[in-house]
Length: 369
Ligand SMILES: Cc1ncc(COP(=O)(O)O)c(C=O)c1O
Image (cartoon, rainbow, N blue to C red; front, side):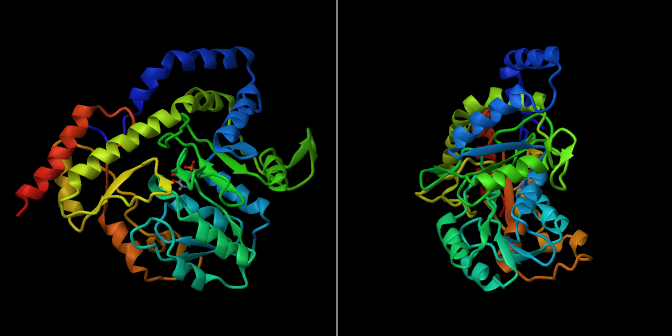
């Protein structure tokens, strides 16, 4: 592939010497878990996000699971989420014994359709889980309002939106708790599995801190049934090296997205939605077209990498049928799954590569008939 969808080696080369110095410090001290890198990262990232607590955990999937457990969500409870989302968001709901309830995707937005969301609330609903898909924050104000009226928690999955803003605030702490993946392909990414839970709620923070170390309040004194979920020192060091340039990297992604938006505006495809009070960080830049497959083939044939986020809605995976997930019909979410195609948008993409991608997309639409 001449222009990959994502090239992680470019960023690595840019920060290699700084990383090695940090790793050297960690390796020479042999403080590998729960050490100073983690403590500093948690402090720095909480400040960056404007929330009181950041608690490093082993992955985004764990971040969701521990958030649900901290809220006391368990057997018999329901958690509402939009049907077009990555698989790891639904697994933890089943893991805590609760039932996911899927709702329609909003038209012209990536978040849940509000009418469908309201209709899905039952006396068993304990949480709504808006997922900030592809870097675009969901429209949180009405979601938080609906949840508050019914005394339901908002668990805001910000795994794809590090640094994004909604009404001037970071997409973290907009709900009661924010699980976030920091896995290798995220805008803020470590070099392995990693995640973080953000919250302004002291009680929830205490619970997540206990869960991640087997429920131990002190060594060999287990207060609650916990789990092993730690963001290790090597990964925390990577995140600390990358955090200072996150805004700059996100600005570069926005710049590329703006160029695509301008270049594609007269083409027969949909470009990602934009809103004046939301700043997307373009974790992915996905166009929408019924011609997704031929366009993908054409671009790949020219050496341009593409991605599909995601090809199946949550109710179309075999995995959860046996666990009782109904066979929903959600036409807008299903259309999006059929039509989305992501183009390269990473911060290290060169201008000439963006030119090549734009020219190739235009060429497809000019020669296809
Ligand atoms: C929105 C969302 N939530 C949760 C996860 C799970 O994160 P992890 O892979 O770190 O477990 C992902 C991973 O891609 C994700 O995109």
